[in-house]
Image (cartoon, rainbow, N blue to C red; front, side, top):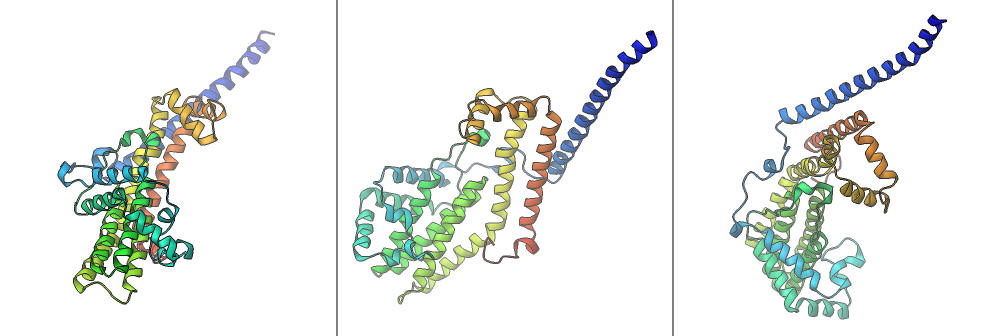
Length: 339
């Protein structure tokens, strides 16, 4: 009887020991895998902290960012105008092409651009384009909670500048028009150099608009002077030569500031309930500390090995994407799309 009782007691104890041993083994395995990926990143000399992206902060007088941010702020104060928000010269979509506006609508654009605020925006963008460096000074450490209020207004500001360029060309001042397109290309490059993917995409969109405006300008009967065309060509080549490296920089920034920051907060246990509530509400449409937050809690504690496995998989994905961007055999399959 005693032997039977001991056997009955030993079975659940053995089961518990097996489960605990399996959990410990799982934890150590996933922790080792995560450590290996992190070591790979470190040994590759890839950025891991904000200082790696900004080893030197430019002096205020050499920094274009305050001018761009001021311009974006002014755009927010301007009256709503669906034409300038939608149209830019040379758009491949007919309804978006400034050149196809009716006479009445074109006069509305002219009147809009004669407004003092619009003129100040153009001046700020032109001044920003004379700078060689751009440091936005964002609070990158906020990760997924980083606010980027100037992105949409900046695209509108660039459209405004390109429409001003188009009207300058229509009035016969093609060299000034070319110079303003060069400024728009320079600004697009500033945003593409900001190490977060949304900035890169905004910069790429501004660059595409600038290139369309350039093609529209070069298709006119009166073209800019050879020197203006030479400078315009130089700007295009500089942007294109930096596109691959800037996209890699953006992916590195995403890895460090966004996805990485969330994983690190969860793995380290530093994620605060209020932040997770805000994030889960954004992810699941007003979760209010419900199902998604419970999933985060599970990841953070009882399913911690799964969280470490997820972070390792995320880091591997970002490294693979980085390699693909740098591999001309892969990124070159669709010429003209990105590079």
